[in-house]
Length: 214
Ligand SMILES: [Zn+2]
Image (cartoon, rainbow, N blue to C red; front, side, top):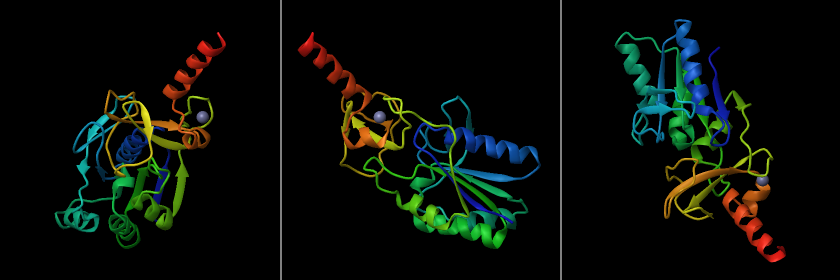
């Protein structure tokens, strides 16, 4: 029985690494697959992982129709046994429904990888639909940590190093220290997300406290 599986984790939890590994493992067993991504940090039609793996992928756009893409492959005589979908939070709810239909009507396994919530802690529409439709949801075992050492569960957006809670839902950036005016992301525990305390803010508070008490 084919399955729609949603692998979820925060940014930095190794999703793209696992997505590439999954495609490799299935390919090694002679199963043919398609890899999709949307807005990967490596650029269009690439899927990259922080451990240095990189591969070509089909770039998902607003117009992508998974059902007709797989049907086209079949018509051209190419098998599609599985579809790996990275950055699935950026897919539309309709596209997630197409993926579910691939599972049910074409017996294609779909492995979707994505983060669940945005920088305001709200579900991405694509992730919400995946949670609603998936046969299984797997929370990635590689945990990322907040600067305090607790398990990081939330994605914070920073602009020029300062955490922001307003703005467009989708702005591509990486987990790193952003230069002035640049968008970046940092994973935090809920407590520090709520208090808007990033690693940088906490360092600055600690050093100003030292001046005060020094
Ligand atoms: Zn924390």
